[in-house]
Image (cartoon, rainbow, N blue to C red):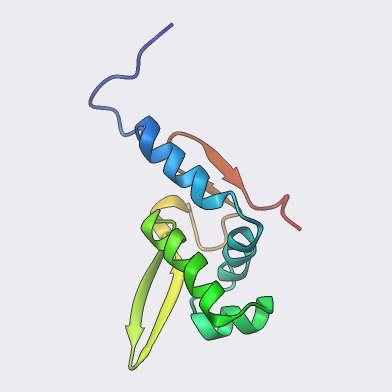
Length: 108
């Protein structure tokens, strides 16, 4: 069995597990699909997905800590967007985490 070189860009086991753990919830997968349309505020996401704002905020916080989404502030609003580091383009239908790829096309 070959080993991954230490200077490789492939994330370690802990990082990979962190990505997969963050994706292991149906609401978070729905949020990711929704954010493919572009950056949105917590209240926009909650409204579109029929979630309580507190629940949407919790799921976004998990995705943010896993670095799957990024934030930027406009006035008093915080907007969430998909992390471009994992997408080949904004229209991309899959994430490439280095340790695994996650295809969004199969989500309904």
